[in-house]
Image (cartoon, rainbow, N blue to C red; front, side, top):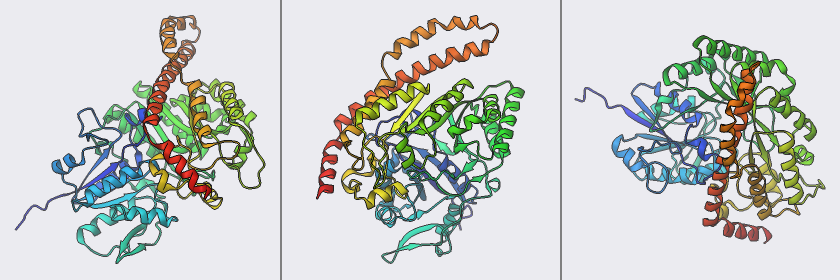
Amino acid sequence: MDLQKKRKLFRLVNPVYPQFNIYSYIAHITTALGPVCVGTAARELPGWDVEVIDENNLRRHGPRAKDEGADHEFLQIDRPADVVGLYGGLTSTIPRLYKIAKFYQERGVTVIAGGQHFVDDDNDVVENALANGIKYLVLGEAEETIQELLPVLERGSDLKNIKGLAYIENGKLVRTAPRAPVVDFDRWPLPDFSLVRYSNITLYPVGRIRGCGMDCEFCTVKGKIRLASPERLFEHIRILVETRDARHFFIVDDLFGQQRGETIRFCNMLRDYQREISVRLDITAQIRLDKAKDAELLTAMREAAINTVAIGFESPIEEELVAMKKSIRPQDMVTWARVFHKFGFLVHGMFIFGYPMKDGVEFKMPASERVRRFKKFISDAKIDTVQLLLPVPLPGTELTKRLVVENRVYSRDIIGWQYYDGNFPLFNPDPPLTSEEMQLSLRKIMGKFYRSRYMLSLGLHIFLFPSILFFTHNINLGWRKWYRNWRNAWVRFAGWMILRGWTKQLKKGDFGDKLKSAEAQLLK
């Protein structure tokens, strides 16, 4: 009789990005929070071990495959997984996700998948996933589902009582009852980054809030806002500082500053903690632009070492803002952006180029004028770093549903999910824009902002470092002014290198041919 029952292994995999893009550098120093949360919940089950493999963040001597991502042959020999979970948080990684799923399916391993790509109101997406090596699809948040699913798989009992699942049974699609979103966060263990193997994490994603009440047409994050306690987020940061020597954090909440009073209380807790241990952290948060009107909140954020704010400006063109359901004017955006600048924040601006108008809206603007307005706005708003993407018809969004009805979306069978990263035109744009102009405009705007000449600026700023001594009345102010200029020069030079690599990859690829075929199909 076997007196020692073998423990089972649940392996979660975050698939590698298919294209070299603006996320590539950050991906090498961070990881996705979702798989860590799900893995931490699964680890609570008796008899189960858990590991997370992030294919975007593998150490130099990690198990790399010759072509891309991790060497799953090695992983399965080294520590055979009984169940594999695949993270579909980014639509552009889906082809890679399917490739991994088929690898494990062929070896008799049960494959589960979930994430934002797999929206439960799109049968085509669900059925396509279940036809590509995935046995069970988790629809919605997965912490509770995985704790119920793994024991059932181990026992071989009925799945129909597990909410939030989709699978094929007797040749038919089965959907179990929907699962309500997680509300009581404090009953769950804090996400454990030690589960992420072979990685080198220096930027830690943390969060307190799920959901977003902005209801943007292009976004997949919807639903009522759900909040954990400030104490939970503070405790998570403190543990990471004290056990992993963490210094850099990204608060993944879509809109930092919701539940204003509790947010300020969290900032004050973090401020006092840093003073107590004599350590200064570096934190980035996403926030609404109109929070610039709240001086008390901004002051609390700066005192808490929130140094960088990521803001979704989306567009400097008023008609596009209306189409996106953004109730804000371009002139107000410039004013508020400068407020963040005056408070000492580094401002990372996120934009969408060429947003499509709704039927009946008479608006025509050539590419050259659009490019001019974007460049002028970025300069006037004094934005430190820029992220510019094309609109993406992601599964489940209102934008996608509208474009499909208007027969404007290029065939997914021709284009492929791997191009759904915001760098490629995926639908017929509003005239007089063409698809080629949309993509070229991205390069023109980003190419103006990220330039090779900033390499020379780096040397100049190093030479000027002693100038901070002229700010004897306020050394911190002198440091911030010098650091902002030095940091921006470095980032903009690095951005130029990323753009150059992306352009080389684009020329080698076959997207141009696929685009012509997709455009021709729409004209039939």
